[in-house]
Image: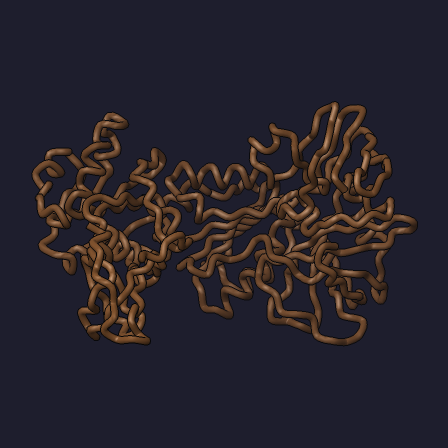
Length: 201
Length: 321
């Protein structure tokens, strides 16, 4: 049912620490905290002295890793009360950042996509961003018909939360929108959509 | 040529712009407008120098929007293979040349919010077109331009007049003023792109300094055009054409292939673009890879050669050509 094998399907290659970076910005959500916690000892932790961590607890597992992150001894650790404050603080960070700063993003795909969108707006090259997918496979999906976004989609087809059409979730991904594309599955015979399958838990 | 896009042009003007640098203005013979191009593009100029056909790449330096003529600037190099000597000493206003359509292997990244250009000597030429483009597009840029001396450096007075000292920084070797690369790359806002064109050592130095200052490689751009280096003559067997050719001391394999009347694909003729990649069918000696296109692993493997700049030492080299 899932339309797969599409080139735009993002790959997340992991948070490899760049030894030359003058500054490291970690933008983490939920279980994404583990991506950093597991690497904290990798170079004796010296990169942490130059690290700023922006953390949004919750995510799919609903567990808060703030205390563990605070214990790392990073230069700055900040916990966000929600996605909007996080995006706001991220913009300020990027506006003041220099080219020696590397950006690392970990969490669910929807989160990673939205952080990447902000970074691209600041002229950061996509390939210089380091990303790691942690937590649920839930997707952020844009309805190609009404253009509305639905977060945390775990099944396909699903009902668009804006226009009510049954949408097939494709692997077709828009980096600009930070979302997968959802296409009406029963346009020719409304009401004949197959049963939803839970593919993105 | 792999893309058949050659045009006949007439030399409309030749200007001495610095101690060993001349600017050539080229107009189409049929009077038609030339195509617009993007800053950083080059053309391949074909010259009939007596018996010999020479083809050299030169960056376009005129405004990308100016369709009335293309301008290139050429440094007269002391031990010229013949191209720069021909253009400087033999070519006259009114002469005809053949040029390719512009090709860009050194384009501007339009997603950048600011662009820093590092030029060494004649490496200034692609930046002249780029700066016109930045100005047209209202994009922030600055140029750091190093020259041997005030008399050897070309265009620096005009650049200062046109863009002002805030955007144009000039440095002269004989006055012991050096580009403070480390200071410059250390404090650039996110979204900056860096471009460098000049002698090989300068390119390596600037790129390394930026990488060590934490720049991601995606934001670093360099143009290295290599003149085919000279070396001992050697034999090459062309398998498909079933002929044996000799590559002379001052010739590249590509030039020898062309002189033998065989068509081989090419684009930059400087070891950068990858167009002339040729399969090595057998070799009993050492391939001298002089290009910047193949990876170290590919060079070590010895299955491919960039025939525009690379050479061979040994008895027998068979190429799939």
